[in-house]
Structure formats: C-alpha cells, structure tokens
Image 1: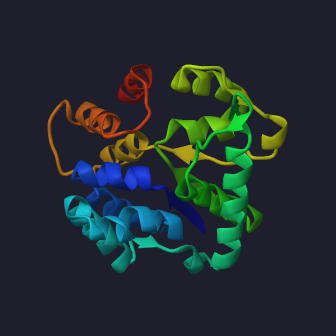
Image 2: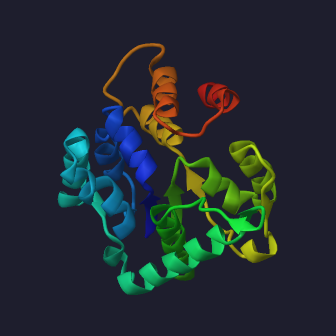
Length: 224
C-alpha cells in the first residue's frame, strides 16, 4: 500500500487548468490511494461550495471524492481525532518558530500541516507516501529549514529569525508538485492533447496557477 496526499494547492491548480481528469487516469495504475484530509476538504470543497465564483471547481473536486478517486484518511485506518490533534501541534510549533522582532508570524495553514501530520502517521505505519504540495514555504521548512530564514526575510522584507532547534525532527517527508504530476501524466500518455509544445504548456500552466517552480527547474523537466 502507498498513498499520495493532496494539499489544496495542486487540486485547485489542476482544476483551474482543466486537468483534474489526469488524476482519474493516474489512479488506474497507482497501486495505492489518493488522500485528502478533513482540512483540505474544507478548503477545496466545503467552503468554496458556498461561494458562487468557486462553486464549479468545488463540485469537480467533490466528484472525485464521491467516485473514490480521492479518499479520506479513514480509508487507511487513520484516527481523525488524533490527526486533528497532531495537526494543531504542528501548526503551533511551526508558527511559533518563525519570528519578526520577537513576534511569531503565521506562515503555515491547517490544511498544509494536516498533510504533514498524516504523512508522519503513515510513516509510522510503514505506508510509503508522497505529499502533493505547491507551496514553497512548507517544502523548504521540511526539506531545508536552514534556508527558511533567508526565504522569509526576502518575503517579508525585514529580518526574520527561525528557531531551528524547535523544528528539529520535522523531516522525513517526500514532496511532489503540480508540474511533476502533469509531467508524469504526460509521459504516461494520459494527457488529452497533442503537439510538440504540450509538455512545456502543461508545466507553465501549473506554474502560473500557483506552483512554486523555477524556470531552471522547468528546463530540467523538459529535458528528462
């Protein structure tokens, strides 16, 4: 068993680009589950269903859940109450570890941290997993927290201090972004488009809908 855990960003990105169908195609050959947490569901389905501007996108994602393309953590035997508590602890830890002038700043959301909390629980169960997330801050936080001060200082245009000691042990997670998901779908022949520039167009589309990927990384993907 393995799992691909989706944060809100990639689902919204694929929906806005008319590419949610590739998840249905990928699921057919994926020997595991595509999972969303309660917090992600709230961001991509529950809340936008009440907003006319975002209602259609929410329905598209809701259909994936209805037809079993996406599933909830309970399908893997995860206790939702424990996951909720673990998520809260992660949010508190991270948001009190980054400060401007001694004041903690909010840099992560409940949805993002719920994905990390779920990943940690799956790791304990020896279930191989990846987190689909487009947000750069969260990936840097868990992949190379020592670079977080520089990133946050550039973002807020003033000195930011990160308590690295407080963030110790928050690693052992693997990530994938929307551009890499569409890359895999393209290489498997699952994209319903033809033309020499389809791959480039797909990757740029995900970048311009919010995925943090550099132009150098895009060039590397195109060469693979």
